[in-house]
Structures are given as structure tokens and as C-alpha cells.
Image (cartoon, rainbow, N blue to C red; front, side, top):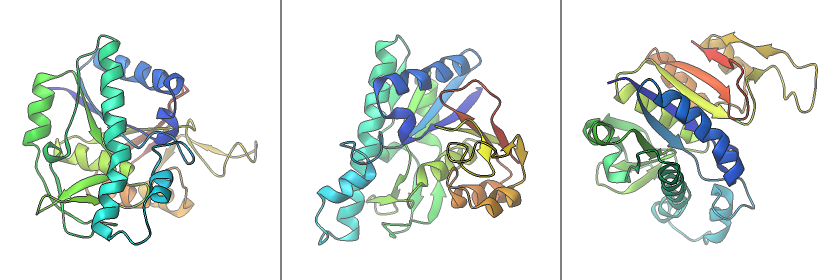
Length: 239
């Protein structure tokens, strides 16, 4: 089975118009195989289900375990929203529940470390559906409790799913169309990179990609193709 992992960040899912742009890329990949879509929480603060918004809702007296459960709401809602809208568009989609995702971690609720990747649940869902929508950022401990992979952890989730499925590439879609030497919205003279090594990407200290994601991809020889949700340009290949 040909499978593509596609991760969409919060700004790519912030409203229906943005999500329609994301779905256009999903439809293109469906022409050649199945798709595992990895989603962040929708939007950014003060959007109602963004991670920072959820943090503001919760009491500072919540335990780390309770905070992880609170933050997981954003990604779970996002996966269900995306799955439902894909179905409305006539695409056979399924929102993967957390217990089926197969990313097993330790009990560090804020910055969990991966202990095992179990592909059975994801593979079973892909056998039955054209598109499987998985939550980024969140995982489950060996005891079955919700954990989180650190801020920006949805990028990390994407390469974890790629590794789990034996794939050598993950596509990560953002609101910029490539990796630049600096923010092109601030400095129009910023240099656009078509290709970077893992080391070069890490040295940029760019907020476009989570460093933990890049290090894991490097260790497991997974190419990261960073693309723009609102663009058809080639993006940046990190390999």
C-alpha cells in the first residue's frame, strides 16, 4: 500500500477557507495512494481551541497529567473536524482515536519520550479508509494516559508516524511556502532554501520546524518535505 504522511499546522486549519486549501493537497495525494493526515489544534490564540487558549482556560493548579488531558482536546477536536469535512466532500476519512495511534511514551506528560511505535492500529485504519486523520502533539503512556510531545510536537508526530509505517518521507505543510533564512514577511530579501541538510536546518534555529522532529528524522533517515498549504511551489527538502 502506498501511503503519504501529511501534517498540517494550526494556521493551515484555522478556518474553513484554510482547511479547503489543505484538502486540495490531500486530494492530489489520493490519486496515488492512501493518506495519513496529522493535524495540530486549529488556529492560534485567541482562537477557541488553540493550545494557548486551552492553557488559559485551565487552572495553574492542574497537575501535569490533567494539563496534558486538557491540551489534548485541541488536537482531538481538530482531527474530528477535518475528518467530518473530508467526508462531506465525498472522501472516505476516519479520525483515529488516541488509543489506536500507536505512539507509546513514558510518563513525562509535558515532554514525553517515545518508548514504542505500534503500527497495528494505524495500518488497520488505512486498510479500511482512504484518509486517516491522526492527532499530532499527543500520545499515550505505557499506562494508557494522555501525554504530550512538547510545544510544536505535531511535527515530531509526523516523522514518528512515517517511521512507524516504514516510510522515508513526511510532508509538513505550514503557512510559509519554504524555509527561509529569516521571516520573508519581515524581510523581503530573505533567502529561500530549496534543500537543506538536517544539520543546516538545526543551525537555522527556525521556528518553522520543531528541532526534535529534525533530530529524529536525521537519526532514522526520514526526509522532511516542508511545503506551503497556500502554495503549489516545491517547498524545501530537508534530507
